Image (tube, rainbow, N blue to C red; front, side, top):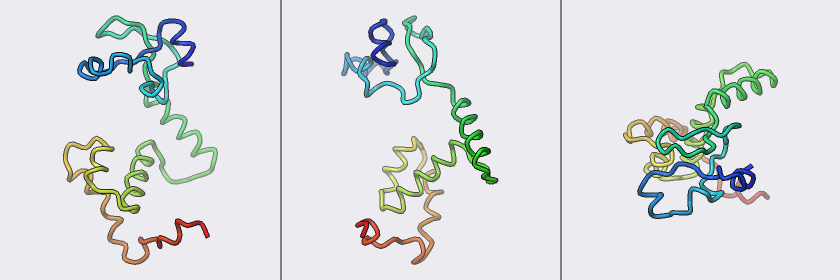
Length: 135
């Protein structure tokens, strides 16, 4: 899709001014493109440039709901569930809380600290380093 967009003159994404100035070709590079691109090309209201945006989050949420329903899972699952799971697993693996704060985009460390409840699990929340060896 990105190659086709480039060939049609639409293969760039919006980058903040400082980033666009520092890396003038980045907006067209694959690494900067959206993981979940929109189906249609649209006109950027800031620049007037035609480009592909990201899909609306409601589409992802609908897909998750459909998948959860089809699997017969009775618990409520959303994209936010994956966010919590991501943060929890990072903490369990020993990732620094400030790194997790940056990855989740939290301004306040207290918001990130919510995930530390998993650290109070005693011996049951700790995995042996031997478990990672795959023996």
